[in-house]
Length: 112
Image (cartoon, rainbow, N blue to C red):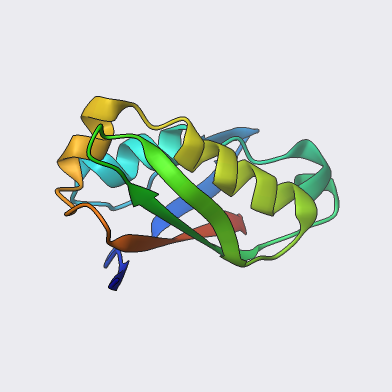
């Protein structure tokens, strides 16, 4: 089984309590970032960092074996994991990953 690290980081930036993707050329990364809710407790605690989420996509374009490879805090880890779990089958197709490969998605949280 091969591990693939997605080459772009889904950057989540917080402005007035709304998260969005910044400077990402690929729409799938914008879609992932748009699914991330920056937890209010993490904003309050000034928590920032990169959460690495690994997952596989099966032959039915469903997420399997999702887990946190390297986390920051419980709240940020959960937000990143939920964003991946909420990807639609159509969005997963855009990743064009062969079955059996593990993807590792770095999701960076930053408060500006």
